[in-house]
Length: 102
Image (cartoon, rainbow, N blue to C red):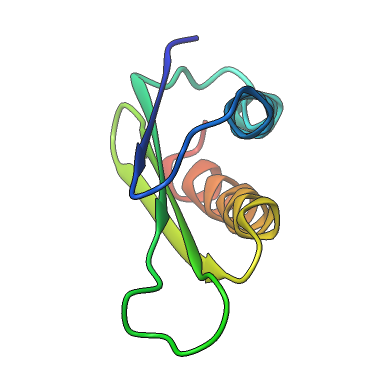
């Protein structure tokens, strides 16, 4: 599984990189026999317009044979943003499987 992880305005530590990679890797169990073509994870710090605290964005793009699933969430904690994207993608994968009968 090839997972591309990139960051924007954020120092990508090993802890964050491994956490995001594990969560993206865990999505394969929901895919069943469906093979994904590509997984891109973008992590960003987007606090330029906020007065207090840091705001993080996580976006995962999962390229499947018949469709591309893209989910983005914004949170005060990068790990929470990653978890929310993973949860949303789980539901999106289930809908994909129902739609495409895989």
